[in-house]
Structures are given as C-alpha cells and as structure tokens.
Amino acid sequence: MSALISEDEISHETNLVWLEDISRLDYVRQSLDRLPTRRSRPAYHRDGRMVGYALLGPGAKPSRSSGTFRRRVFWLLPHDRDTDPDGLYATGAPAEAVDARSLAPGSKGRKTERSEGRAQPAAAGETGR
Image 1 (cartoon, one colour):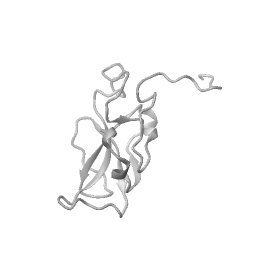
Image 2 (cartoon, helix red, strand yellow):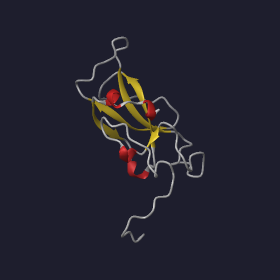
Image 3 (cartoon, helix red, strand yellow):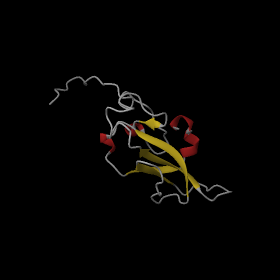
Image 4 (cartoon, one colour):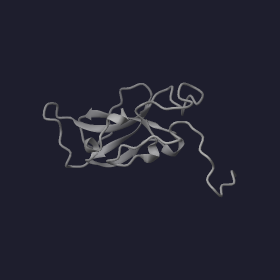
C-alpha cells in the first residue's frame, strides 16, 4: 500500500517509466516489488495491467538474501475507475492508489480530489470549450 511506502525505500529511484498516458488516469495503484534488476521492464504477474515502473540508480543495493531490488510498479485492475467508471471506485480509491501526476522519482505521491473521484471546480478563466 502506498501509505506503507516510505521515501527512504524509494530514495534510489532515478526515473519513472510510464507505459500509458497517465493524464487520462485518475489514479494508479503502486507497490514495491522484488525484482531481479535495477532498470529493465519487470515481468507482470497480476490481474489487470502494468501502467509503469521505477528505474533505480547504481547506488541501489540488492537484498543480501535474495539478490533482488525493491522497485515500484504502477498498475490497475479490471474493476478500477478507468475501465469501470460507474463501478466500485466511482468515488474513492484503493488504499494503494495515488494520483499519478503527483508521483516523481523518490516521492511516494499522494491522493488528490481527482484520484478520490470527487469533482474538481473549474479553474478561474476556464470556459469549458
């Protein structure tokens, strides 16, 4: 869950790779996965789809016991808002979900009005065209 990810666990991130246009997504789920490399595209073994992943710099050390690296993976399930807008998450969001636009390397991101499915007021000067 994103609330359980601390910024010291992701301090060696150098970049986030997005596999989809995140401007179209209200939220993404994030988790720390144990992966065999610092930088390559990880295999994906969940339902749904992988939306992105983090790359680690050379300072990231593998686990002594497993030789793996803890890296963030961003993903969505079939019942998430992007594919089922009137479903379970029509409002609210999963515990591990954050607004993808609030993410950056080394920053765990946050929930926003958009990620929670609450209407945002139009910005001053918007005409709605």
